[in-house]
Image (cartoon, rainbow, N blue to C red; front, side):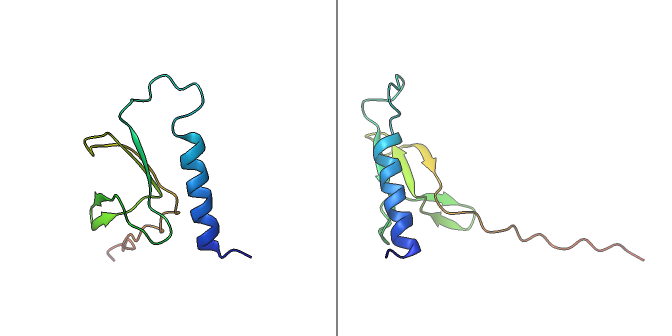
Length: 87
């Protein structure tokens, strides 16, 4: 049986291979490259507010500029300070 991480990595690879580009997609650039960050391999990250983030799927152009990002992990709940009413 696969671990949750192994299953997630397989799903990411399948989605990357079968959905980028979509079947009959006409606006997929010839220089687009699909990259997966899976299996603990961090190949292509993007800068987030707290440092680099490694989405499951990153689409780049041949010059390495990011074209599209597909997040494969759920976002952590936001940590907002509780509002306090003055008394």
